Image 1: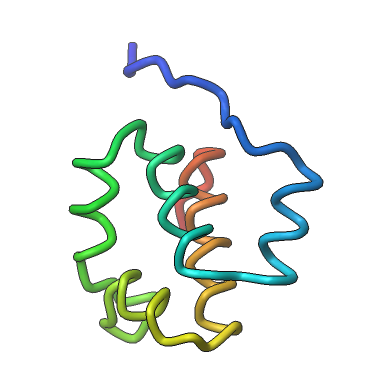
Image 2: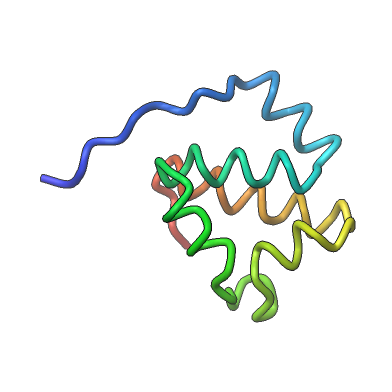
Length: 85
């Protein structure tokens, strides 16, 4: 019934590396994968989220803080696998 989704391109070993060494570039590429394109990824990246203390994923990605960057990557993983909470 819902829209079909293309499986993630990023494999488990790459995801592990990204979580250990998060960067704004990794976050952007994961957002594009999770949302299936740049337009939706950009919209999501610019939306403040309660789970990020009302900050946008872009602000967290640009912060350089590994903990906040990991948090955004984990949110993207949950979105990609349909685990909304």
